[in-house]
Length: 136
Image (cartoon, rainbow, N blue to C red; front, side):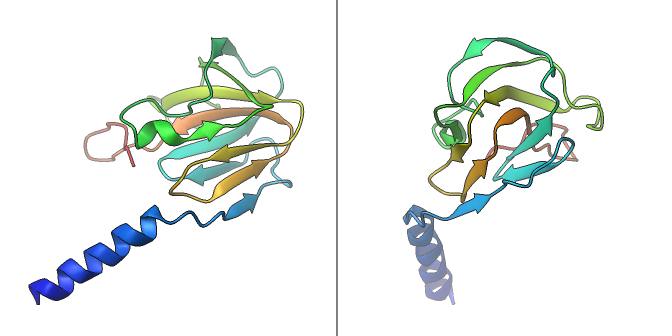
């Protein structure tokens, strides 16, 4: 029994390391809608959504796993200062992503997100018991 479990774990780990090149097309995403990639949510927001100073392309800060959600050029990222109105109070904010052209959010273990031009607020998944940010 223990050998079966170890073999199953090895298969899952091997599959996670494979680059599937899968890409989800979000071209019909409207303001007020959100898409998930692992432990982050990408919310389409209005052009005037508040934002802070420019930051790098990482959409989740933390250890190497979490820091691999990347908004690829031509997207630019800014400090997030306000969650979308429909989000729960205390939602963990990530950056605001702005792009005048289609762009991709990449991560080696999740399907890429192909996003239309616009403004997006990133938020992080929360653990309901601890109210802490989930890290994938």
